Length: 251
Ligand code: PEP
Image (cartoon, rainbow, N blue to C red):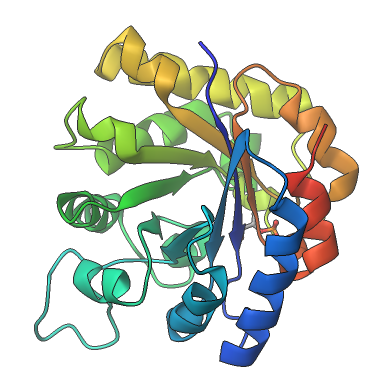
């Protein structure tokens, strides 16, 4: 089954509104003749409206970098699905390793975010991945299985159509170290098999699984040649219009 590729850019805590408009504009020019793949941009919350204005009615998907499970209330520092939509976003990332590692988000909390976002019609990119010590300790697949099972608790087969999984080995994020194509393919194959066990073959076959971790113009073609790699979640290289444009235009 052929799955539509998704190239996603996570801008993390970078860009003011003006910088976001400029970057979104540069990226728009690189993908205007591309019709066979999807592009998603995740600026910081404060730059969503500026990016949305620039993207206009283009097919580029706009995403929040996180989302709360509640619509409103006493949740200082959080952003609700309704607020994201109000700023022009139709998607959200949850479970990024920086949220897990720096801000202590648990699989249960990430699952609440994911379910809350889905309930309001958002597309959700669920990030999972093992640390270096977990990989070296032979724990990679145990960790991935727990993050998938707990992250997707209460999600129906039907709602899985709006879920994307991003496999991001923590040791490869922002370090310049990329997983080998074999390591990435092995993890993606494992995740797809697990989704088949948890749901059914059709759900596993339509699921897009992105690779993230130091994706650059120099390594994207190899990564994208793997059968279970359906796109990329890009951090550092997504902040440069030219580099991200090259990644979108992978061969
Ligand atoms: C990320 O932020 O999800 C990421 C993969 O970052 P980088 O591409 O910089 O490793």
